[in-house]
Amino acid sequence: MKQSVYIDTTIPSYFFDNRKSFQYLITQTKNWWKFESIKYLLFTSNEAIAEANAGNYPNKEKCVLFLKKTKILPKHQMISEIAEIYMQNFLMPKELTGDAFHLSYASFYKIDFLLTWNCNHLANSNKKKHIQAINAKLNLFIPEIVTPLTLISEEN
Image 1 (cartoon, rainbow, N blue to C red):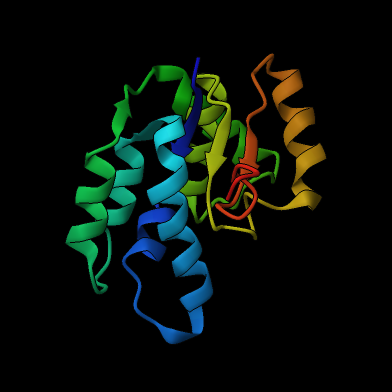
Image 2 (cartoon, rainbow, N blue to C red):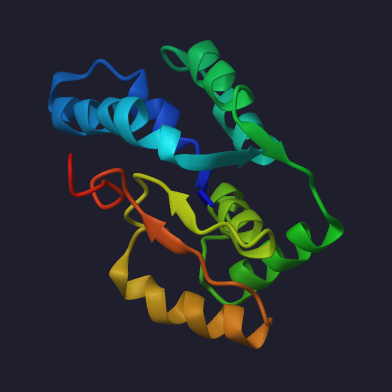
C-alpha cells in the first residue's frame, strides 16, 4: 500500500518559482514531483489552498491549481482545535496559522509525511521532540516532516 504525503504551500511555491538563488531547491522540487510523487497518495487541505491564494506574488494561480489537483482532506472540527493547541504551546507561531493547520491535518488524518520547504517551523529537527510531546499528549499520530530532499528513493 502506498504511503501518504500532505503537500503544504511551499511545495507549489518552489515548483513555480523562477529565482536563480533558489534554483537548486526548485530543481529538487520538480524532480521529486516528477519521479517520486507517483509513489505516494497525495493530500492537501482547503487551508493550504487559501494560504496559497493569499497575497500577491508571481504564479499564484498556478500554485493554487497545483494544490487543487491534489486530494483535499475534509475539515473536521478537531483540526482547528488541534491547531490552536499547537499555537498555545508555542509549537507553531500564532501569526502564521497555516503551519499549525498543515501539521494538524497531517496528524489528525494520520498522513505518513508532511512535505514542506518550511525548515523554520515544520521540517526542523529542533521542533521534532516538541511535536512528539504535544501529539503524544493529544493521542495523535506523529507524521514525519520532510523536504523533497529527504523523501527520495534510493534509485534517485
